[in-house]
Image (cartoon, rainbow, N blue to C red; front, side, top):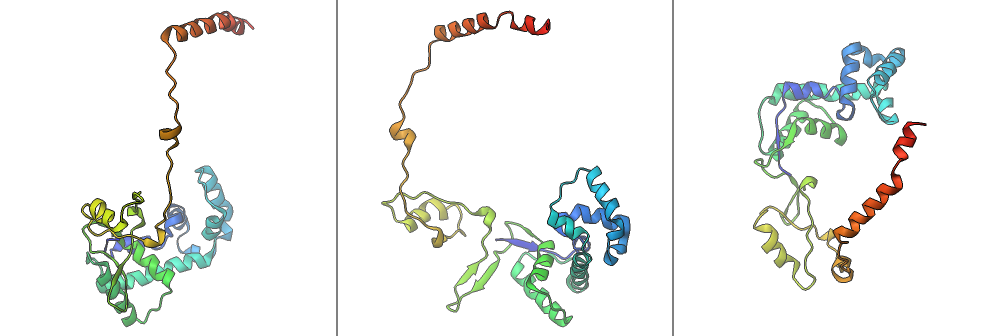
Length: 234
Protein backbone atom coordinates (compact mmCIF):
# COMPACT_ATOMS: atom_id res chain seq x y z
CA UNK A 1 0.00 0.00 0.00
CA UNK A 2 1.29 3.47 -0.95
CA UNK A 3 -0.65 6.47 0.32
CA UNK A 4 -0.38 10.23 0.27
CA UNK A 5 -2.29 12.34 2.76
CA UNK A 6 -3.37 15.93 3.25
CA UNK A 7 -5.98 17.41 5.58
CA UNK A 8 -7.79 19.93 3.41
CA UNK A 9 -10.86 22.03 4.14
CA UNK A 10 -12.83 20.07 1.54
CA UNK A 11 -11.89 16.72 3.10
CA UNK A 12 -12.89 18.02 6.53
CA UNK A 13 -16.34 19.15 5.36
CA UNK A 14 -16.90 15.84 3.53
CA UNK A 15 -16.60 14.00 6.86
CA UNK A 16 -20.03 15.31 7.84
CA UNK A 17 -21.41 12.63 5.50
CA UNK A 18 -20.68 8.90 5.47
CA UNK A 19 -19.16 7.80 2.15
CA UNK A 20 -21.64 4.94 1.64
CA UNK A 21 -24.64 7.33 1.65
CA UNK A 22 -22.84 10.58 0.98
CA UNK A 23 -25.22 11.96 -1.68
CA UNK A 24 -28.33 11.21 0.37
CA UNK A 25 -26.90 12.77 3.55
CA UNK A 26 -25.66 15.81 1.64
CA UNK A 27 -29.14 16.44 0.21
CA UNK A 28 -30.84 16.01 3.58
CA UNK A 29 -28.39 18.38 5.29
CA UNK A 30 -28.87 20.90 2.49
CA UNK A 31 -32.64 20.77 3.08
CA UNK A 32 -32.79 20.70 6.88
CA UNK A 33 -29.38 21.90 8.10
CA UNK A 34 -28.55 21.33 11.76
CA UNK A 35 -32.07 20.03 12.39
CA UNK A 36 -30.61 16.60 11.50
CA UNK A 37 -28.99 16.55 14.95
CA UNK A 38 -32.38 16.89 16.65
CA UNK A 39 -33.96 13.98 14.78
CA UNK A 40 -35.61 13.61 11.40
CA UNK A 41 -38.86 11.84 12.28
CA UNK A 42 -40.87 14.93 11.34
CA UNK A 43 -39.34 14.92 7.85
CA UNK A 44 -39.29 11.16 7.32
CA UNK A 45 -42.23 11.14 4.92
CA UNK A 46 -40.80 13.99 2.80
CA UNK A 47 -37.39 12.31 2.64
CA UNK A 48 -39.01 9.03 1.66
CA UNK A 49 -40.87 10.77 -1.19
CA UNK A 50 -37.60 12.33 -2.37
CA UNK A 51 -35.88 8.95 -2.43
CA UNK A 52 -38.77 7.43 -4.35
CA UNK A 53 -39.03 10.33 -6.81
CA UNK A 54 -35.33 10.09 -7.65
CA UNK A 55 -35.47 6.28 -7.81
CA UNK A 56 -32.71 5.97 -5.23
CA UNK A 57 -32.11 2.39 -4.14
CA UNK A 58 -30.89 2.19 -0.56
CA UNK A 59 -30.53 -0.74 1.81
CA UNK A 60 -32.69 -0.98 4.89
CA UNK A 61 -29.60 -0.57 7.10
CA UNK A 62 -28.47 2.61 5.34
CA UNK A 63 -32.00 4.00 5.33
CA UNK A 64 -32.11 3.50 9.08
CA UNK A 65 -28.84 5.43 9.41
CA UNK A 66 -30.31 8.38 7.51
CA UNK A 67 -32.88 8.89 10.28
CA UNK A 68 -30.54 8.02 13.17
CA UNK A 69 -29.61 11.15 15.12
CA UNK A 70 -26.65 9.40 16.79
CA UNK A 71 -25.29 8.42 13.38
CA UNK A 72 -25.35 12.05 12.28
CA UNK A 73 -23.68 13.10 15.54
CA UNK A 74 -20.90 10.53 15.06
CA UNK A 75 -20.16 11.94 11.61
CA UNK A 76 -20.18 15.46 13.03
CA UNK A 77 -17.75 14.46 15.76
CA UNK A 78 -15.32 13.12 13.15
CA UNK A 79 -15.63 16.33 11.14
CA UNK A 80 -15.00 18.54 14.17
CA UNK A 81 -11.97 16.47 15.16
CA UNK A 82 -10.59 16.71 11.61
CA UNK A 83 -11.19 20.47 11.70
CA UNK A 84 -9.01 20.76 14.80
CA UNK A 85 -6.31 18.71 13.09
CA UNK A 86 -6.64 20.98 10.05
CA UNK A 87 -5.82 23.98 12.24
CA UNK A 88 -2.66 22.22 13.44
CA UNK A 89 -1.39 20.49 10.29
CA UNK A 90 -3.75 21.31 7.42
CA UNK A 91 -2.80 21.86 3.77
CA UNK A 92 0.46 19.95 4.08
CA UNK A 93 0.84 17.01 1.73
CA UNK A 94 2.57 13.94 3.09
CA UNK A 95 4.14 11.37 0.78
CA UNK A 96 4.90 9.19 3.80
CA UNK A 97 1.67 7.99 5.40
CA UNK A 98 3.58 6.59 8.37
CA UNK A 99 4.84 10.08 9.29
CA UNK A 100 1.36 11.45 8.75
CA UNK A 101 -0.13 8.94 11.20
CA UNK A 102 2.59 9.79 13.72
CA UNK A 103 1.79 13.52 13.50
CA UNK A 104 -1.96 12.86 13.75
CA UNK A 105 -1.42 10.81 16.91
CA UNK A 106 0.83 13.53 18.33
CA UNK A 107 -1.70 16.31 17.75
CA UNK A 108 -4.64 14.21 19.00
CA UNK A 109 -2.69 13.66 22.21
CA UNK A 110 -1.90 17.37 22.55
CA UNK A 111 -5.59 18.17 22.00
CA UNK A 112 -6.55 15.47 24.55
CA UNK A 113 -8.83 13.82 22.02
CA UNK A 114 -9.40 10.08 22.25
CA UNK A 115 -10.84 8.27 19.24
CA UNK A 116 -11.90 4.68 18.73
CA UNK A 117 -10.12 2.79 15.95
CA UNK A 118 -13.15 3.09 13.57
CA UNK A 119 -13.40 6.85 14.24
CA UNK A 120 -9.72 7.41 13.60
CA UNK A 121 -9.77 5.20 10.51
CA UNK A 122 -12.69 7.18 9.04
CA UNK A 123 -10.68 10.41 9.32
CA UNK A 124 -7.51 8.89 7.88
CA UNK A 125 -9.42 7.38 4.95
CA UNK A 126 -11.07 10.71 4.19
CA UNK A 127 -7.77 12.60 3.89
CA UNK A 128 -5.60 9.99 2.14
CA UNK A 129 -5.42 8.48 -1.34
CA UNK A 130 -3.38 5.91 -3.22
CA UNK A 131 -0.33 7.11 -5.12
CA UNK A 132 2.42 4.90 -6.53
CA UNK A 133 4.99 7.64 -5.87
CA UNK A 134 4.29 7.62 -2.13
CA UNK A 135 6.30 5.69 0.45
CA UNK A 136 5.01 2.20 1.33
CA UNK A 137 2.77 2.02 4.39
CA UNK A 138 4.27 0.08 7.29
CA UNK A 139 1.82 -2.22 9.05
CA UNK A 140 4.12 -3.20 11.92
CA UNK A 141 7.72 -3.89 12.87
CA UNK A 142 8.53 -7.31 14.35
CA UNK A 143 10.72 -7.83 17.41
CA UNK A 144 13.62 -8.79 15.15
CA UNK A 145 13.09 -5.42 13.37
CA UNK A 146 11.59 -7.08 10.28
CA UNK A 147 9.25 -4.58 8.61
CA UNK A 148 5.81 -5.83 7.61
CA UNK A 149 4.12 -3.63 5.01
CA UNK A 150 0.41 -3.00 4.58
CA UNK A 151 -0.75 -4.87 1.45
CA UNK A 152 -2.82 -3.25 -1.27
CA UNK A 153 -5.59 -5.72 -2.09
CA UNK A 154 -6.19 -4.03 -5.47
CA UNK A 155 -2.69 -5.09 -6.54
CA UNK A 156 -2.97 -8.67 -5.33
CA UNK A 157 -2.33 -11.29 -8.01
CA UNK A 158 -1.70 -15.02 -8.28
CA UNK A 159 0.71 -17.19 -10.24
CA UNK A 160 0.56 -20.82 -11.37
CA UNK A 161 3.99 -22.30 -10.66
CA UNK A 162 5.03 -25.61 -12.26
CA UNK A 163 4.98 -28.35 -9.63
CA UNK A 164 8.61 -29.33 -10.24
CA UNK A 165 9.95 -25.76 -9.83
CA UNK A 166 10.95 -23.98 -6.61
CA UNK A 167 8.44 -21.22 -5.78
CA UNK A 168 11.08 -18.70 -4.66
CA UNK A 169 13.14 -19.25 -7.80
CA UNK A 170 10.07 -18.75 -9.98
CA UNK A 171 9.08 -15.66 -7.98
CA UNK A 172 12.48 -14.01 -8.39
CA UNK A 173 12.54 -14.68 -12.15
CA UNK A 174 8.93 -13.99 -13.12
CA UNK A 175 7.76 -11.41 -10.58
CA UNK A 176 10.44 -9.49 -8.70
CA UNK A 177 12.17 -8.12 -11.79
CA UNK A 178 8.88 -6.49 -12.78
CA UNK A 179 7.47 -5.65 -9.31
CA UNK A 180 10.44 -5.16 -6.94
CA UNK A 181 8.31 -4.52 -3.83
CA UNK A 182 6.11 -7.60 -4.20
CA UNK A 183 6.16 -10.49 -1.72
CA UNK A 184 4.56 -13.91 -1.32
CA UNK A 185 1.77 -14.54 1.17
CA UNK A 186 2.69 -18.15 1.94
CA UNK A 187 -0.53 -18.66 3.92
CA UNK A 188 -2.35 -18.69 0.56
CA UNK A 189 0.09 -21.01 -1.23
CA UNK A 190 -1.52 -24.28 -2.27
CA UNK A 191 -0.32 -27.31 -4.21
CA UNK A 192 -2.49 -29.13 -6.68
CA UNK A 193 -2.89 -30.40 -10.22
CA UNK A 194 -4.57 -28.72 -13.13
CA UNK A 195 -6.02 -30.86 -15.91
CA UNK A 196 -6.86 -29.16 -19.18
CA UNK A 197 -9.93 -31.00 -20.47
CA UNK A 198 -9.77 -29.08 -23.73
CA UNK A 199 -6.19 -30.18 -24.30
CA UNK A 200 -6.57 -33.85 -23.44
CA UNK A 201 -10.20 -34.70 -24.20
CA UNK A 202 -11.25 -32.38 -27.01
CA UNK A 203 -12.42 -34.11 -30.18
CA UNK A 204 -12.24 -31.97 -33.27
CA UNK A 205 -15.39 -31.87 -35.37
CA UNK A 206 -15.05 -30.19 -38.78
CA UNK A 207 -17.67 -27.52 -39.57
CA UNK A 208 -20.49 -28.38 -41.95
CA UNK A 209 -20.06 -27.55 -45.62
CA UNK A 210 -21.62 -24.43 -47.14
CA UNK A 211 -23.94 -26.50 -49.38
CA UNK A 212 -25.41 -28.29 -46.37
CA UNK A 213 -25.96 -25.03 -44.50
CA UNK A 214 -27.57 -23.42 -47.57
CA UNK A 215 -29.91 -26.38 -47.92
CA UNK A 216 -31.04 -26.04 -44.30
CA UNK A 217 -31.70 -22.32 -44.77
CA UNK A 218 -33.75 -23.00 -47.90
CA UNK A 219 -35.73 -25.65 -46.04
CA UNK A 220 -36.51 -23.27 -43.18
CA UNK A 221 -37.59 -20.57 -45.61
CA UNK A 222 -40.02 -23.04 -47.19
CA UNK A 223 -41.44 -23.99 -43.80
CA UNK A 224 -41.98 -20.37 -42.74
CA UNK A 225 -43.28 -19.13 -46.08
CA UNK A 226 -46.64 -17.45 -45.69
CA UNK A 227 -46.49 -17.33 -41.86
CA UNK A 228 -45.73 -13.58 -41.76
CA UNK A 229 -48.58 -12.81 -44.18
CA UNK A 230 -50.93 -15.00 -42.14
CA UNK A 231 -49.91 -13.23 -38.93
CA UNK A 232 -50.48 -9.75 -40.42
CA UNK A 233 -53.95 -10.69 -41.73
CA UNK A 234 -55.17 -12.08 -38.40
